[in-house]
Length: 620
Image (cartoon, rainbow, N blue to C red):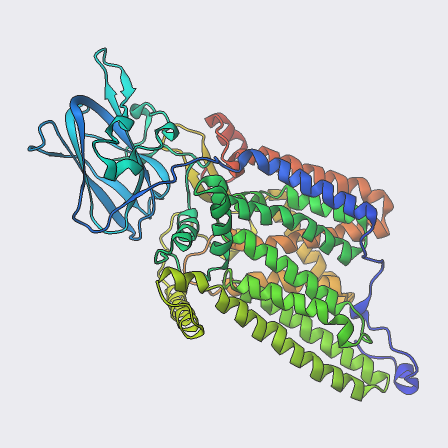
């Protein structure tokens, strides 16, 4: 970016630095806001059918030690066919209940394990243990926890009547006899029907979930949603390997709507929907074209990874929302011009810092995204310095630099540190500590050191079945299966993968943007390349377990790169508009084709093998 000699000699007007080239005005119009509203409503409508049930057991019996059992007298001997139980929290990873049956209260028959494991996603799910040779003559049931803090939300018994038919036993009749266990009998109307046990897969612990992704927890929801529940009830939180903000947001939904799938997912869903207007504004600001913004918004609405990850209680929805905001506000700062005083551009810089603080308080991978911001920030200061020195305004630049650096320390260090520390308030309260600044900082520091130790462990999760490497994410090689029904030959499963057209088309667009950046240095391209690689490259040396959903922040920049190609096509070849619409339409069609696995919709096996298993590594 050499300055012309004539500019160096005269210094009468600012030189035209190519890093600030902008072809069109990126401001929003009334028409744009109408499209924003339409896309946001569309996103909400396609999400609505898959939000999850609004009802689940809310009252729980909690073990206070590892010795006191639950002993229930049914009042009569019955032929016990099986039982269902709804498991609540369990602060240990591999513990179970000891289930014993007796007809006389003296001779007890121990049954196979009645599990309550983190590893098996047992938390907040309906489970059925496999009994030994049912029906079993039973009057007394004894359930013993093997550790303190285990919860049962509901217990349902299924017996054989005089005709040999399976019927549900009236557990409400036991309330007067066992008032201390009332929490186990008070929500029998929520008990699902017991399926044909012959069609349930037998697993090592002889235990199976009959919950679906609609009425139970799955995958990492067991960590984040259960910790949100612990925040509400001030129970020592189990999951502290990530900062608390995302779990605090999840707890807001639970506090309003209850501890049910809708309650623990609604905040993630809300942030997933709000990504759409944020992304639309970002695209319009970058490229100044409404057609490009609409098509880019549609690509994001119908992106399979975004759809799946924002429909469950994981942290990715919050993280990516804040990352989009970070880059949007940084773009507002760096595209403000080289003559704008700090007082006129401090707001986007401030909002960028606040967004970074929220992202860092959600997940540490926000620091990966922040590397791109640093590159953009430094590049802007370098270009501004060249411009103002060329105009003979060296002192003005030095004053601006001093003010900007001081403001940046406040915006990107002090404010994020405050946000991060304050996010640990629920942790301090859950630990039973008095809330003071000293205890808050101490708890934050101790839990952060623990998280650092956990994430530094190179052997964690390397044997996970769906673990994958960064280069596999880029090619969409190994999706993650989040949920699979326990029923044999079932096509009911849920997993996360990238919309194939966006995955491959986005890589082509990134390569095109990179080549174009070499000859045509514009902020839009610089931002897209910086954002994509900042969110990807730090994962390359990571040795601990990683999964394709860690690629989600980079998918945002794949779509921005595609939008750049759209913009270039419209500016240089007006007849290409139809091709842009065709690309958008095909992407939408692929989303719908793969929707059963993205939303957990049961489908016949033939559909799975014919339409959803494109590669041998797509284990659906």
